[in-house]
Image 1 (cartoon, one colour):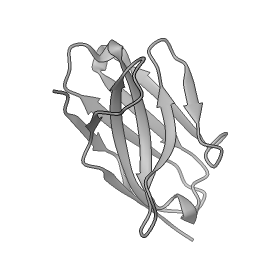
Image 2: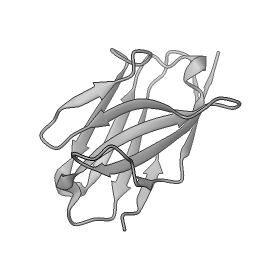
Image 3: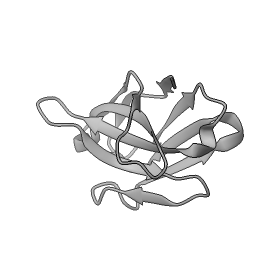
Image 4: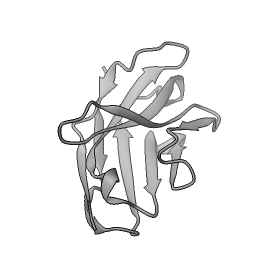
Length: 118
């Protein structure tokens, strides 16, 4: 069982930056692909970014060039640096983990609220 704890959300103005963190309670962090997802009010949860062991990453088109995912494997932590935030980025952001090579994210954090005011 892996527990994920996110932090770093808050209320910011459009154009500001935030960095989200997610700490995983596992000694085998390296076997997990880590992802960030978000869910806005009244909308379905959507993929934001993922980071694999070794540095490979993928982004949703809506956040490319603005968001950067990174991981510190020694600290079992994944980050989401969010720059040039827009009101449409307002959502609850969730950290998730899946064993690399599988398709399902089995572990989810509790979420952290990000609100971007115009």
